[in-house]
Image 1 (cartoon, helix red, strand yellow):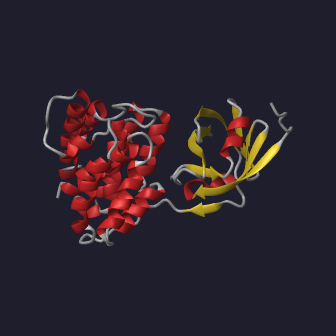
Image 2 (tube, helix red, strand yellow):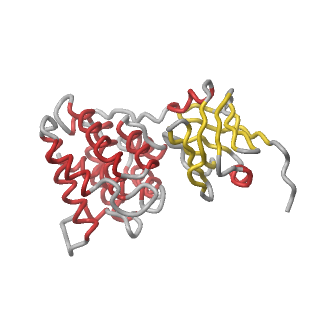
Length: 290
């Protein structure tokens, strides 16, 4: 094994705008989890994803070109952001020259993209991996505990969209039946909620004027305490209308040719094991509800 240098500094390639303040502040925290091409950090109570540039940019993500080196050096203990550097044991990631990108999903005019809805749903059915919850977009079939629970949750979300002024009963159902439900780093139920919130961010007209942000707040607040810290951070990002690159590609594709829409859907379904497909299922459910 090659001996490691005492200190090593790598440059970050990109930095999500909600994390830009990390270049000018001092925070301490810890490494929560490390994977083949990414790691999750807790910095002063904030969840940050450190990932290879091979992965899509996300609303909580700092990307680096040589993540394999980061993974080799990364400490499983203390993390410190200070002076524009992210210190992880013997390695530091320099954030100061990183490209800052805005994960805010653009608004879509109420009459735009509707003709693409059938293309999106059709391609989602085709591209969704085994284990996804895309069956929620079709008629209920044989009983499945996860799908049955999520259907009850979607019914409650529908009631919430109709009348967010009386949220107690539907919020209780959503917390019990959807939040933290299913497998994955971000469980399937949480992914479903993220998709619903991103639909409301992109098309506020899916509910009554002024209701979209209120419903997003209620969904995130009800689910966050009932799931993992990492998933709760992504729920909070979706509440703000922040989304990964493939979501931006999907929104841009809705006024283009069908093949561009299909390409965007396939790109989205490659996120995680089933996370992309599950969140797109929530997006399409909200879309179809009108």
